[in-house]
Amino acid sequence: MNQQPASKKFFYLLTAALTLFCSEVSANASAQDVHEISDICMYSQRILKDYALVGMGVTYHDPQKDLNENIKTVDKYFTDLKSHKLNDKLTAEIDEVAKTWAEIKPEFEKTPNKAKMSELRKKVEAYTVRCQQVAEDVAKDTGIEGEHDVVLVAELGLESQRMAALYLMKAWGVSDADYETEVKQVVDETEKIYQELLAADEKLVSKEIKDKLKTTENDFIAFSVLAKSKSGRFMPSVAEENASKIFDALREILKMEQKLVEGSVSGYFTPVAEEQQGWFDKFTVIMRSKEEELA
Image (cartoon, rainbow, N blue to C red; front, side, top):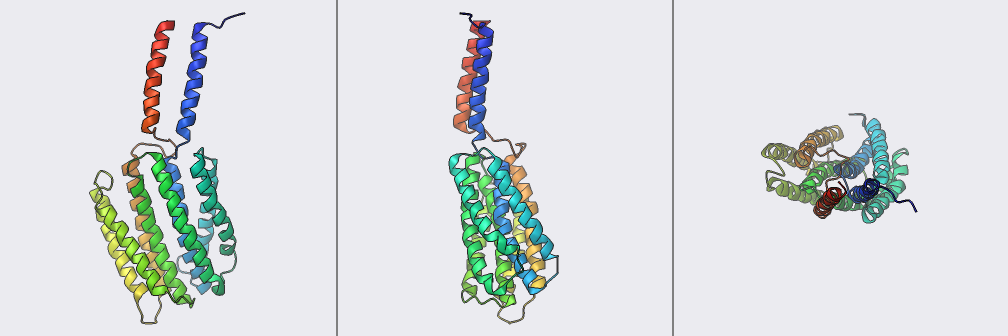
């Protein structure tokens, strides 16, 4: 029976081991996965806001165009996430959220119906809550310190659109007996997020980012005054302008935060978790020793 040369055996062993290692690494979520699931969560409330604007006949900022583009973006991101090699838990969670999105999406593609707006918002609320939970799970799975803060900044963008959606529904004449309570919840949740980010270590949330967050916080407070107004006079275009201003500013802050905590890590590269790094270090020692024996 012919025996393979020792060098060839070593090559096969090395290839198999590296294949196993790469398979293990690819099971972890990447920074890009966090970006995409966070955007999916943010756009859910933005789409709801645009749906209300279209229903009211407001054309400021072309909400129909934004609605259509954001629906396509959410679809694309779900397709991307499903194609990545995530672990079973995250895959199941993303599939769960994607299924809910598939149930909600057809309503957004129809002519806005004021009679269905309240029920649609309830579905979007439940969907958004679950989406945020999944985003946190994905962030944790990356092993990148600070990804939680990335998710928090994205959540601020979500809350700004939630506030706008609530206000525009009221302006449209959609009945909501809990409006004041819901607005207060948004304000309280937003303030809680700002406090956490502003108190974070500056290696994770820099002074520059904190200064910009303070500006958006002030803008949000001013927007909340409009949402809480009991004058009975509504200004949907002003609400859209304020909501988009805050959203765009937070998108820029989000990019800064991603760059800060992810550094030179490529979006699709998965950082090696500590236990995987330890395994790789041991493997390297063994391979070098084996190579010396075969030399």
